[in-house]
Length: 276
Image (cartoon, rainbow, N blue to C red; front, side):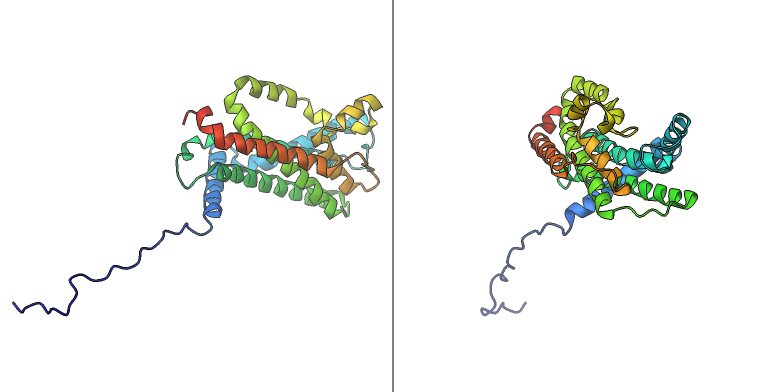
């Protein structure tokens, strides 16, 4: 066996340690996976699958249009009943859908909270994005159908439309995030919240204008943020409908406060509330 040369080092130099970099676009990948999971779960729970998300608001519009066409010859604004109710039902449904889905995000995905790559923000954003995209697609499809069937030649104020959608989205996200902590913490609060929200479709001006009510009642209801969302959307399609009492900043402030309080509760108490 040949002798080992003295010039060779006893050990090769070690490579410098490499730092583990977090994967790029981690949140986007996690949220996309959660959205696919949510879509599959919703489809499996309904016999009509994802199509039910489109059928439900359409049926609501048809029923409302038929009912009120028997009572009055023309709606409060314009001459087309379906368009009048689309501009009220859709923004209200967008808010309700987002707030409901976000509020149930922790319960639905509680088994995923133990994974290091999944955070409460990921769970919230997945349900928020899915509900938002679904309802906006339904809104666009219904407008196209109404424009084609009734030959309405719609020219809405797109800035006002986007403002109304943004208000509904922000409000649903904020209240849903807060309720994602409060619902698991108190079953009584969840029941009371459900009772309070039952007449909200009336108190939000979906079927009639709250500014047509007596002044003392209107002075209270105009502070209802969902009523401001509905009025903002109607103003986009009916420019003559004056809404000086609507304040997007007020709605966004409520949404931001609820969202921040909800995040604080999620990061501090959600594991205790869910017993994880």
